[in-house]
Length: 263
Image 1 (tube, rainbow, N blue to C red):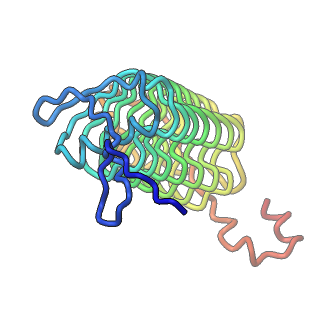
Image 2 (image 1 turned 180 degrees about the horizontal axis):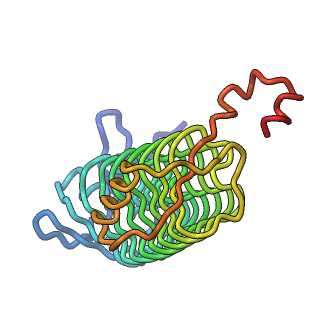
């Protein structure tokens, strides 16, 4: 097989492989530790590459990305403390797998925003699609509008705050963490949850399997007031607390006839 001629415009590592960062446009306007760039003509891959170049190679701590145009999978895998502002809406899987950054989205987001977030903050000014905060382990996800079904599915930590309503199966299979939802919630709240706490200010269409109303304590008051104070949300409304009834902890060991009695 004939050898492939090297690309004169590319940079090669010690193994002779093209370094992807060599193709990054590096179009940002940089002012010290702050930078911004327009993503209107860029692909998802180039947007993320530019962002990572700024944060990891140039030491920028505050990045504004204009015109993200609801592209999917933007701002994923950022593992450093910084501030990122998306001046526009994001598509599916925005800001997933992050650990540390504070992200502001001046628009809406699609499915699975902040999926598997470890730490940091994602603040969405508009509405969110389904599966917001799926499997998140830490940090805060704040949605100032409404959110879709299965909010916080398989949540393992952190706090989700929704100022509007939430769809069906919110808190499904929740393992740990907290959700504060000021509006109404659809059917199946907390279905099959194992642990964690759900706070709801509006009407609950129906509770899921093994989700029960819990007793309010001073700890709950302190938590809710502190989160509202941090994000400048004013005084919290009256909320109801929902937790796991713990009847399904040993579900697998039950006989089929016993499961019917439990459920």
